[in-house]
Length: 322
Image (tube, rainbow, N blue to C red):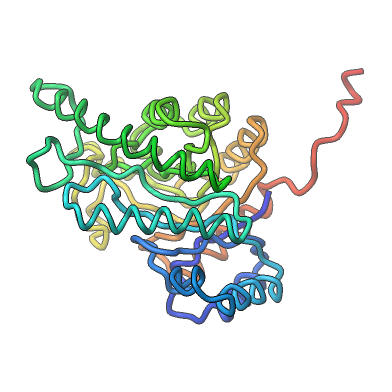
């Protein structure tokens, strides 16, 4: 498994400087933002699509620092009820798929998006309970919208031979493994997970069981290495559906943490082992969003732990069982 990094935290640095730094700390793959919330600090999507010189420059930077691209990232909401917002997100996603095809990149990482609760609503609506019954009706409407859109997008991805790796994220329609499999069943096998455990931890989902469930359907297309710590003193008072500002870290029920600071090294070795059991051998792409440390320190600590947790060789023969 490669150790990777989503390069967004290094967006203030030039691509060459960011790549040099990452290569120097032992990173082997980069996940590059090409639109949406990740932005495009290190990859101008429009230039890469239209200018051979831009494509050559990116390939040269990757080769110089012995890096590969694990995924192009464009997290946004293509199901947004505002038509212009949805259209822009859709264009970003389709162009990211085309760009991945051009560069021989296996996956594009993204969100499922979230529709409104009905055809006349103006804002997305995350449904978390089936009652009162209008909420169940709203969710059914949302799935109709999602299945129509994602069936078409999945066909686009299949045409280009690119996997679409959806991050299961609260405030999106797909936020847990059963929803992920529902969308996959309604579309095609190009639709799968960007398996980010950080959002599952605070929902109370067992991460290794989720890996096994999705792995049974060959539905893990990419992996984020990102941790979460639930702070029980706060969670006991207000639960984990916490709208406290991320910057107000001491009053939140949970925080995104650097790898190893929400769950220990033994747990992360179990995560890596379970990924291997289900056949995943791609990048462990570190996403740094830890409010308690700097980007560089968080990345370096994550790389250090993952170097010990990941496997670098393929399994040998089980000679002891013969």
